[in-house]
Image (cartoon, rainbow, N blue to C red; front, side):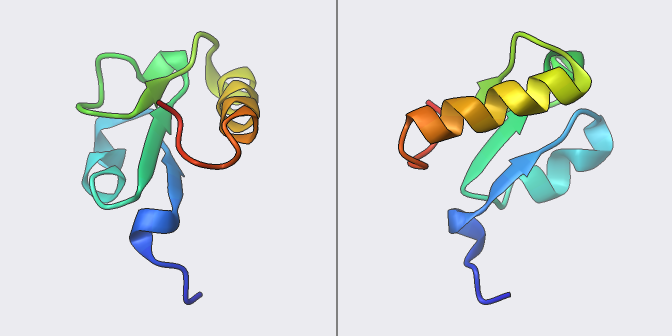
Length: 68
């Protein structure tokens, strides 16, 4: 795609997602991923799809400059 990993948002919710979340610029998880992933930048308050929407809204609020 030509997009650098550090310019990429990754969202996961299982331990199987950990390896690729470690290489993206911003990592996040819906609340159902809490405790399954280490070192994500943001964990949403809501689970599953609602959590993804929350993550995307937070990213937009921050001017697409990360989630912290």
